[in-house]
Structures are given as C-alpha cells and as structure tokens.
Image: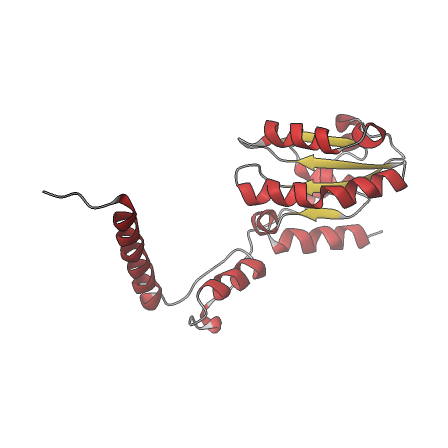
Length: 194
C-alpha cells in the first residue's frame, strides 16, 4: 500500500469543503451578515452570488449604555490626564492580520504623538498575541512617546472608551463588524446630541 503525500490530501479536503460550501450557498434563500462591510467582503469572495439576497442585519445596540458611561472614567482608568486627547483602537489579538495591521499603522500614529504632546494612543482588546504585540510596540515607540501609548487589554465597559475618545477612532474592520455598523451610527448620533 502506498501512501499519498499530505499535500494532495489537504487539496482534496479543500475541494470537498468548497464544493459543500458552494452547494449550501446555492440552496440558501439569503445570507445575513452583521454589517455592510461583511456584505461587501462576502460578495467579493463569492462574486456570482446575488447581492439582493445578502441583507445586513446589525446586532442590536443599547444606546442608553453610552449615557450610563461615567464621564472621565476611561481616561482615569487608563492613566490619561483629563485634558489629554485619545486616539482609540479597538481590536482582538487573535488573528495575525489584526495585530499586523496595528503594527503597520503604528509609525504614523507615533509621529502624530510626537507632534502633539497632549495626545495618547490607547488600544483596547485582548487575545493570545497581546503580550507579543505589546513588546513590539514598546520596541517601535521612542522614549519620547512610549509613555503615551497604552495597550490596556480587555476593557469593559467599552462604551466608556468610545465616549472618551477625542481623537480619531481606529477600528479594525472586523471589530467594526463585531461592534456593528449600528453601534457606530448610534455613537456618532450620541456625539451630536446637546
């Protein structure tokens, strides 16, 4: 009995998996992603799928949770002075593309911090690669700005972070999907209120 190389077994499994997936998609009445971004990604991956059958339905959002967030609590908890401006990133450190994206955009963010002494970069999120990314960020940040870069790990309630962020919000696209387009729109509406 001769054994087949592992690569051909993997390739065979992939073809079987793709055929099953494609068969299920042909039978589906529709697909319900959690955001417009996920819809775009789905249609890019499956260009033959009817876009009319892909209807985003955002996760529900309790807008009152933004009202309940204590003003100044986030800055106090992460060590940012009350007058400090916060550039916020919310992500998970579970997937390589997420933390590579953070590291890719870190140099211009560090430049922004060098030019603005009252700005802080705060990253909320956790996962298996958190410690590794924390070390990489520490190595990339100069002593001048290192004290204004905060990787705070898992942060709850996240509404406090969004309420206190006074700079741009830097969300990974997947995080936006998880938090949902609805949360983002509700937050923007919250910021416009008196």
